Length: 276
Image (cartoon, rainbow, N blue to C red; front, side, top):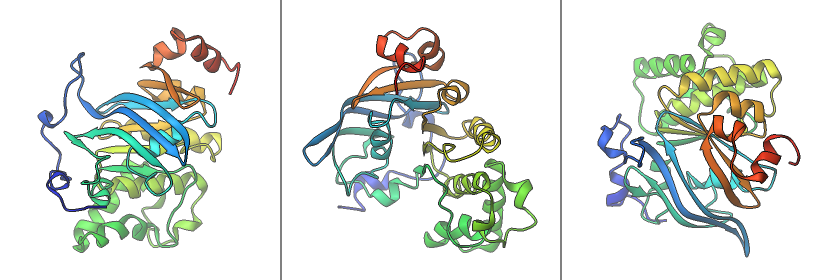
């Protein structure tokens, strides 16, 4: 994997000017888009011809039955499939094709962060979970690190619950708290886009509701793409919804349209619980 190229050097963590993001035909700022995206696991075509554009500062839900390709698609957006699959097509971010071999993947992941289905906090303190990656990237100023810890935990709606016990092991937190800590850890790197793969599926309803409230606040600062099997969750939190079926995107529209006036019969059947 080539790194340190001209393309990768154009990625910065500073808040970019608006002109970096291209506009679609409806004058929406597009944070990320894919064209002809295909994913192969060996000879098996798991995802085909996915063309999607994600509006900046909006939440997009990816829905569909297990095995429909939605998680495969999500993981491709920050190159998590590189070691297990062949990914073809274009993933465009700030004018760069980040599916190119010329992109520094580790640099790119600072800008497109990911949170997985099950909380995976490090076996470290709460504060060390937040600062670990920052220190790896050369941030050692104690005051700055403390500020980032507080800001990230506040943005993830966890600060008030842990502010007096930041040296406590992250593993002692509840499942819902651990997931919000992982979200805080991701946003501490000041990414542009957050990818979340069923972040509330392993949580109880109260913790799930807190995650949803957190996402609604986070979209003021981040573009969010989330995989969910929970139709009520998708309808509550997302602005747009893409319906995946057997490795294809069958329908993509405003969430209110997907859940009230879908155009495809298969979408109607899925959102009404007739399969999946």
